[in-house]
Length: 304
Image 1 (cartoon, one colour):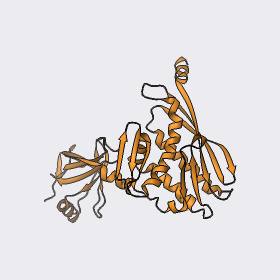
Image 2 (image 1 turned 45 degrees about the vertical axis):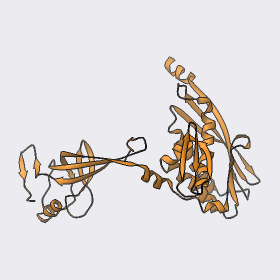
Image 3 (image 1 turned 180 degrees about the horizontal axis):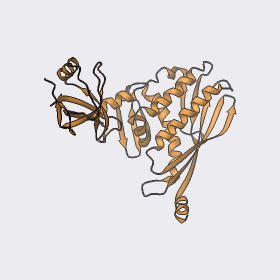
Image 4 (image 1 turned 90 degrees about the horizontal axis):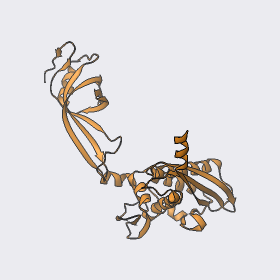
């Protein structure tokens, strides 16, 4: 109980507000509202992933009419560490949300000419040579994968389908950090981050000799085979001659059979040379021997 109390004391709360202003009519379709809220939450959750020991709750404090305004409050709690500044977490997240929309509007669906990181801030120069400055954390989160971009585009698309609305604004605390979208901006908001990620990533490949347990063969189509190699894997078989022969001979596979191969593992690396989770790919470059069952030491020979 004492440890739990100490943990609670070490949490520092911060709060910050922003407003999503849908211009035009003062009512809104419930489904449209639900989609806007869901995507906004997703953006916040994606941005907080890189914050150590942070807990964020997004609240709606008021709906206003005239246009249709949604007042949000980001309530953040963070464990005190040497690396974290809990007092600024909520305001940083609000700046991140506004910055994400700012980036999408600025790059206009085209690859930026340059992104210059300078400490806490990043300068993003678009294809037309125009520059904006956002937090480096915002820029890194936006361009590391397409999760934030897709939610921003989703909000833009659902607002654009409300034909009577001339646009929308997002306002930070006290009307600061405003980003505004008009109808003419909608058409230029297009996905580009996946293309940037693909261009920037590197591939690490390593080929090893292995005896794979055959889990799921494919004797008719061109799908991947299932094997066990420390864990369950799916692998493409590039040895087409071996595949052709084993299919012609209508070889019968049984439980626990092994296949000796040269196995290639490929993973994608990010700009920091860290493995991108879920990018593992396996391929059998060459089958090096005959199918066998080690328990019975039987060899099942398939002539190459």
